[in-house]
Amino acid sequence: MARPKAPTFDLQRAAILAAAAGLFARHGFHHASMAELAAACGVSKPLLYHYYRDKAHILFDIADSYMDKLSAIVAEVGREHLAPKAHLRTLILRFMQEYQHSQAQHMVLVQDVKFLAEREREQILDKERLVVDAFARAIGALQPRLRRKELRVPLAMLLFGMLNWSFTWLRADGPLSYEDMATVATEVFLHGVSAAQLQEA
Amino acid sequence: MARPKAPTFDLQRAAILAAAAGLFARHGFHHASMAELAAACGVSKPLLYHYYRDKAHILFDIADSYMDKLSAIVAEVGREHLAPKAHLRTLILRFMQEYQHSQAQHMVLVQDVKFLAEREREQILDKERLVVDAFARAIGALQPRLRRKELRVPLAMLLFGMLNWSFTWLRADGPLSYEDMATVATEVFLHGVSAAQLQEA
DNA sequence: CCTACCGATCGGTAGG
DNA sequence: CCTACCGATCGGTAGG
Image (tube, rainbow over all chains, first blue to last red; front, top):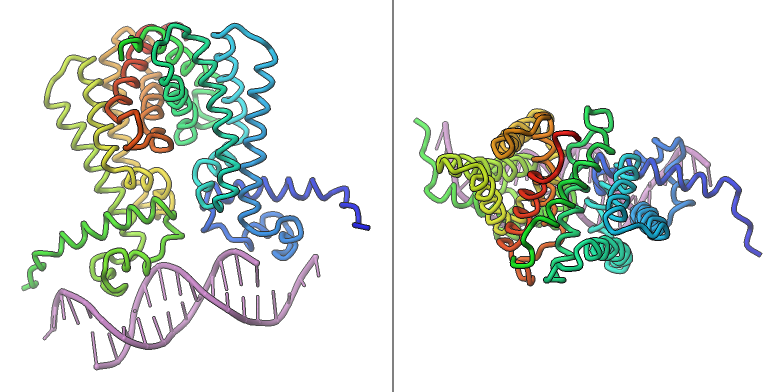
């Protein structure tokens, strides 16, 4: 019989994950060492390998659990059955609120997922595609007269660009809050999409 | 008297720079080795050190020369003295055309500049700030009635988000060209900014 | 759960 | 005494 997990097992893993996300975000995956991570967690280096098979698995778990959080937000907002404009507005606001508390995880997702092996990388990319598709459908619902349906995904990517690029410049302690930014991005995008002559583009 | 540089010196440096940008973009700065770079250039590893003091200096030169190119585009477009809308439209188009041919350089700029020492990193960031300010001014000229002037830089960052995020998903051989993307982003942004009630935001 | 290590590979430089 | 360039190997450190 397998010995049951210690009750603190999941807590320890979560602590390692959070510390690793910070280190990977600051130093990059390859430049952040396992010894450094162990020190940050206050445990020995070999003990890390009790919780995670190897360094890549820690990276995978950061990206995977973060994508699960974003997917959960998409599902929650979907269950509210909002009108098209309110739906997209709410998606944007909830994502920016999540981003504010997950800056390290987001940087790891953007910068380090490419270092995963094909199989694990594809798992993450599949989850990303589902989220992008949800935004693309929300944009499609907004503009039923949008003639070129193939523009829905590119428009979603433009929107993600506005939101995700905030990681390079928006500071939680700056004059502009994440909520302010969500409002401005929402206004620009909603008015931009409806006013632009994309029917002819 | 110092012996003059070999006539091929600058050509060799340019070849090293291009190969390094590709490797750094694909593998990340720390995971790309000097041996690998030397092999890609068809020279011995010690010879690399004839052209560049160390690995960090190669990274600096990629980012610095790329920022000079972007700054030159800003200056060129400025000399055309276009009307506000045409000015911003042209800036966006020229940047996307440059991006199409500099995907590796751009990824290095975004992902690896943080590994430079304080002093060199600040030099790059200074040049980035000048380009952002030029876009912010172009946006301000577009909207003289924009009450909250402090929104000009955030709006410029939203625009850069749309443009720069294209590196994560836009393919040169895909159905949507960089020029198409420039058009769509321009339409969304121009209409979005002018229609949004940012005076009250 | 630690100290003590390994196979390998890193960035950078020696002599000639 | 400079440059341009080679084969071989340096001291240190990475992940495990």
